Image (cartoon, rainbow, N blue to C red; front, side, top):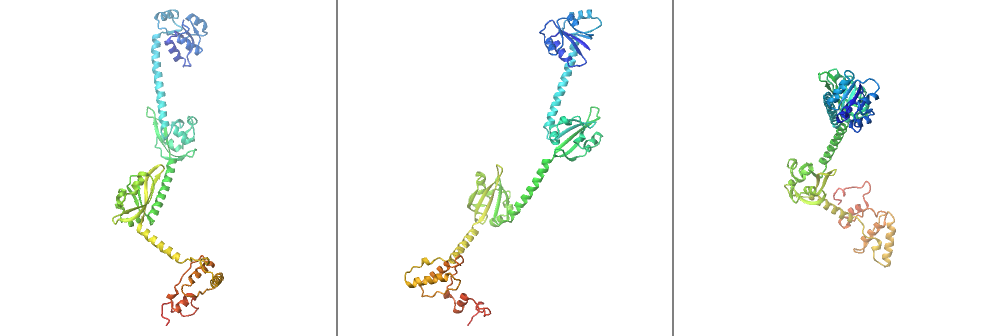
Length: 456
């Protein structure tokens, strides 16, 4: 259909914009005596011929003119056109065009509203964490959101218009297209993502099955977290077994200072059973002093070797408490309690052991023996020679002449210097017992003396 637009004001410009979108309409010329009119400028942009009057337009136009659109709004102009063209071309007045433009405006509004709704729907679909794929009745992809693109590793442009079974198993959506229920299925995508998939029906306004909506849920992270939870439970059980079996008394509180865990050694030491401690404030076991758990929770710093009295028996203990950090968050504290009485006992045993060790060590060397007489020099020389051998050495002399000094020096000079130096008070033994102590028993001899029986 060939058209001439008469009038290029704002109304003509609007008509021109609307009609230019229709391929079945060809605008042959735009007519207005004002070359600067908005419609004339738009016509030049659209490469549509222009003319200052109808006669000039008719001279430019080649071919049949079907319709003249009178957009000037002047009745006399329309009447003159009717007189000149009573049958062909058809002259459409501005009043009729107003009704047409009203309908077109409503159409454009509806189209714009539909596009806005489509954009909003796409934004909603892209914002959801679940993948969404729309499939028509023919099994072709009609829509795909960003989550589905990520899960399947395929762009929506690639998927749209193609058969969905390339990416989604038929058994997921085919029952829906046939009016049946869809099962929930697990699958692995080509991108290596573990998915839980199910389909929902989509019906048109006549309630006829128009397609299906396939919903994809990524469970890869769920599987990974499940494995981590399993590992954490195993680690927790292992740590609890270690804490329960250790001989050190241990107590654990949460970030609020509420008792969370104790072990049997704690109960034995403090006399407090679990029901008196678990779920109770950290100060419940303190008989004298300040709770180190609360101090650590306030400062975030560990404390060491703090004396306290705990439990109903006011047991003297020494505690070490350390904070429990999870990342940058203080989640509680753990304390190890040491019984002071056991520490004292161990200290006494250590001192006794040190005294015993000191008693088993030689103190003096030949350099410590003072004397310049020929007899002393000769005795030292003989003792050095004896120290170089493994033979037994007998030292004889009056009390106070230095026999023990020579014994120390010989031991220090011998190959057995790193071994213990055992001193025996021979005056405490009888002659027979001394002989056994020094030289031992001959094989086969009577051992009655060793059994504590009298040899006389």
